[in-house]
Image 1: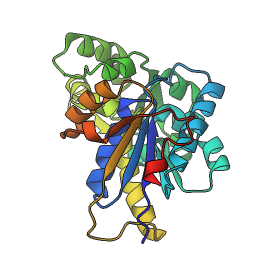
Image 2 (image 1 turned 45 degrees about the vertical axis):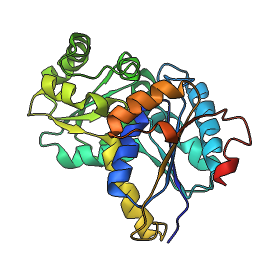
Image 3 (image 1 turned 120 degrees about the vertical axis):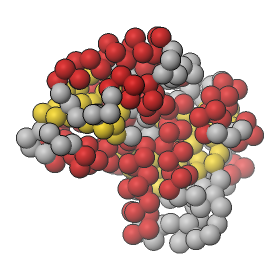
Image 4 (image 1 turned 60 degrees about the vertical axis):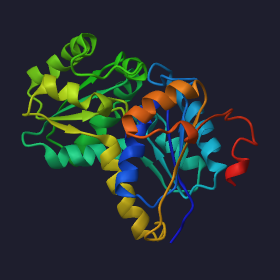
Length: 278
């Protein structure tokens, strides 16, 4: 058994979808979440910049003596996962691999759609991993650059005309392609799940990368003897690099609890930032 915390990071609010699923699946684990709200979005950045940000984010989380890390960011998972694993000697879980495994398991026709940030789609990682697991897969990928800012602004209501307009524009080519499975290739996107379902209809299975990653995390922590003591109650502590008030408001709405007391504004380059958690 190992009661050290799990570290989870994202460019902003979206990573809370992975936090929610991890709490659901592993209620006894302590979680340290970092949202880099001062530099969101990552998806419009170059690969070298994304890698640099990811390494900095992980160095911050390492100060909390974490036992494992979840990269709750599709952009980082597709662009910087090898560099993270090369530089840090702890289990690191990206959201891409679990999402791909689920899509291959769920598809009936082999026609799979992927939506993500510009950087995620540009990397080609989803297509490569899908064809490794399902060589005959027919894959269509679409960048959706305006969805992350929309979610960060708290707009994910299916009845919001702007939300529906954007989703119709982004998803119509995927529906015309005949995809029966859609990977929500950014952890912000599950916040739009109801709106995406309204556009896609019941014939398309949606893959939530945070949920799938939480399942993999639970299995592997148990197998490696890293799970927390049974019966304990875990906690969630959140750190952001900018605008803790907005993060608390939207994050609390999504998680269904007041998280104001657990959100701290921090400077990830300040070596004393995690001192009180040590």
